[in-house]
Length: 198
Image (cartoon, rainbow, N blue to C red):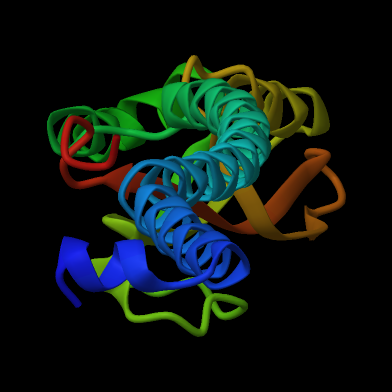
């Protein structure tokens, strides 16, 4: 419609056309200026909500992780204490190498001594290689007086490393000389690689 034709229209029609143009301009300005800002604000609100959820989840994970670290530290401390009671392969050899002299130092006479190496503990159902520990046992029989046998048991129990007495049987060997016979089975645990077990 040309300007000349617009001038020929009556006043109410012109006002209607101008109103329609103003409405069209307002809609165009709204979609070019306001709609992107509204979309941006909506996205920002969704982002804030997602970040709040992420921060909450992160704090929950951090609390759980902190609890697990404390638990791990306690387990490491317990493992260190237990590890100090275990023999190394060198200490194992030294202990069994000196066992006969330990038995004789207490005044006992060795009747028999049998070494049983690399026995898995009966209550341990896991394969040996997962624990890194090997149980080494020995069965022996000694003859001596009651005090000598008690001294021997005390010496084994007071060792710097833990020695388990699996069986202990004492009976009279010679009544007239007050000699007793003691059959004993002891077990020590050897940790194969202390550093790898950490």
